[in-house]
Length: 75
Image 1 (cartoon, rainbow, N blue to C red):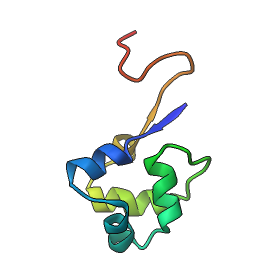
Image 2 (image 1 turned 30 degrees about the vertical axis):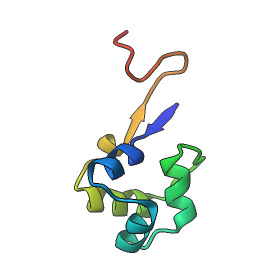
Image 3 (image 1 turned 180 degrees about the vertical axis):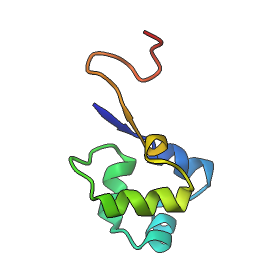
Image 4 (image 1 turned 60 degrees about the vertical axis):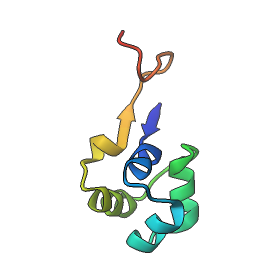
């Protein structure tokens, strides 16, 4: 499973969905689906805009978590 850390980045910078929409021009539905981790696919342009906004790398925004494990599990 792929985890999206958009909610963490938005919380860190105290931004809401409207702020991210205004700063990136991304559709609110796209931002919301990433925020709530319900997105099934993501456009690379959206990833690039989010990485530019949060000044982060793709790996800071997304994390691969093998099925059957928890993201914070040290196994």
